[in-house]
Image (tube, rainbow over all chains, first blue to last red; front, top):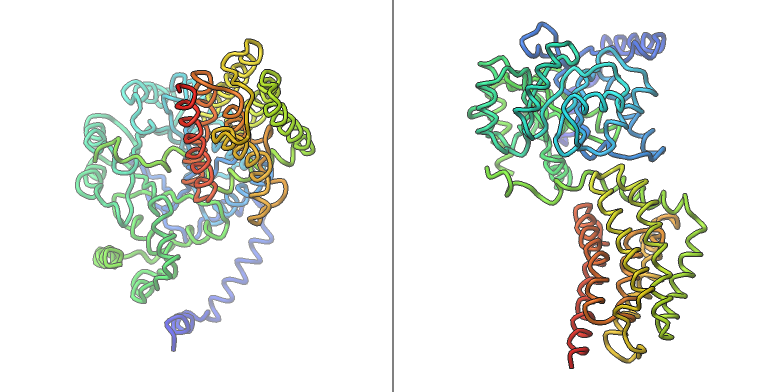
Length: 319
Length: 223
């Protein structure tokens, strides 16, 4: 019997599961759309920034994928992606003034869909965009068409002292809820560590994936120690990681399904990230509804144990 | 990790291939049938250049450079890339330069002979920009609206102009006139390379051939 058939047989749906599914479907049809967006059932959540509030472990990035300008066809296509994100229990959406029209596209999507309660709007301030942190946040609010941001981060540490001070003031005034800093590609970890140690920040965003694990050495332990929430960007290493696995048609190890419920490479790669105790959420970006669904499924239990995580890393290293 | 060496070309291209090619398609959808007029202008410019009417031939493409600056870069490309506004100013600068050259006659070459190698290269590049580039997208499976056309889209405008100035100009003026078209073709070629498009090789190929023509003409005029 082929591994695929074996897998399907093993996970044949039970009568109880069928009834649950039918019930859930009927309930979903009966409920208004807004209630669907509040559905986070099954999606694992983690407490963040020293509060008792929780965030779904799978968020959404918008770099490149949501920069579609004013193209009506692509605006509607991205709205469908956002819809799928919320329907599957999504929360955090991360954007930046550096991402071209992505904040406007988010504004369009939220206007079409309504703003769900689960939205955790995360933006950034970035010096080349021009204007002070306050001016940038005000402009971005207009572009997203939201009343507030849950998180504003200093993008890639540009003028971070000045921007962070302004963001702290805005947080104290209640204009924004949380502040953070970002980096990517493993850049400037020394400076990030220094800021995490000396400044009162709620979030740090950095690159962490199965092939880029430098953050495990110092930044992730420090985040745990300081109660700083961590957003993992580039979970698929800019897409190349999952594309290569799919292109080479590498079979998913059977043990990955047995030990942590991985049925796709998206599960495998994302579960590795979000099962690290210091990681609050990962923010994969996609242009396709099907990929969004795949990403969101990775946020469901079971999660890999520390031993399974080691095995996952060794599997990828061996390829 | 060193912050600067960790950057890759991909980090500077903030959109996907789907979005970029849709942008080109939207230009086609929005402005059709203006393409027929811009192509006719391009053909007329080539004829005038070959008949040694370089001043009017310099003038004709100028409004098209300004049009591409506004319609393509300011109104559309700049939505996707914050650097788009700067490129628009560069295209306007090229339009102004062509007008100044037309009015002053600066850098105009003697009557072109099609058998002269740099002129032949100029003619080939101009025809490639006017006739072959619009066919590349439809022939590779795209729609006719994806056809990139001189005076509507940036790449064929830059390519065709490169060919035309090789026919018409000489000396320092020739080198000045190719700076902006050539720089744009480098930027566009690198963009297409990141987007995994074979168009990148085409643009770099045109640039290499144009460079041969430029150097040849410069050496020739010193003799």
